[in-house]
Length: 324
Ligand code: ASP
Picture 1: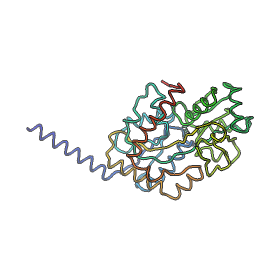
Picture 2 (picture 1 turned 180 degrees about the horizontal axis):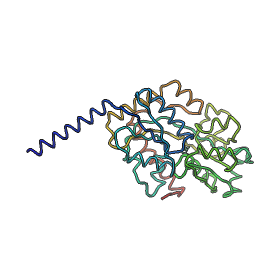
Picture 3 (picture 1 turned 30 degrees about the vertical axis):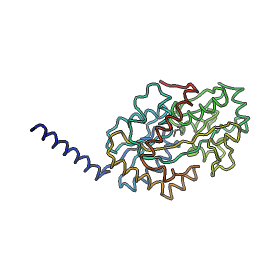
């Protein structure tokens, strides 16, 4: 009896502590892990959102770049972090594709996280070093077929969005290129502008400035429709790649077991960020927009991740690309 009441008292105390800590959350800075290098497109989205969240939450949301293994290193680190709301992850579509791409992923993207909320779905662009010969998507397709392995394609590792786009392109074209992996497409962009690699497909949040500045050549956007801020750039579908469609959705995650009250506070701060005119304007400059209001709940995000894992699984299996 004594043991039982002691146990109950302890449980009550822990429950109370949990509730109290959720109530005064956050009372210290929050780390937002971005699983790619600084200066890239995911980092750009994270820093914009983190800045606004810091104001709403009254505590700094500090971005930490943990690149490597196509985003799975940073994601794995957050999966194992304390579920207290002080370590969160901002990741993209790779959270879903890694589930199939990796034979031995040390975490489960669907069950080791609390989905906090979706942020934005960013179009991609296929870009090249300025000196690359092809002038259009059909010419690029012929060029890649004729030169295959000689063409170098930069990406952020297996599981990254640039990897996914490259994989879709190579299977549409029916030819492999030589892939060059980086910790993120920020550093890959430097090499593309410098002419060390030939091609890359990346989010508009990284490529818009370089395209407009004439630092890279652009062939196509990867969405079904053209992108407002890059209205002169045709879609891959217009260029003859039937059904080619990918947008890089981003979301925030907390480790599994993070109290619901904490997740709710984080979700509300993301919602405020997505309504922030400064964030909306910057997103528009970078070719994207906030997720619409009806896709912003944590529950929607949770189901969406599972739906995306299911959606991409057969595509990846058909391409036969795996990593260990
Ligand atoms: N854009 C990268 C990707 O391909 C990641 C990054 O550096 O943000 O997933």
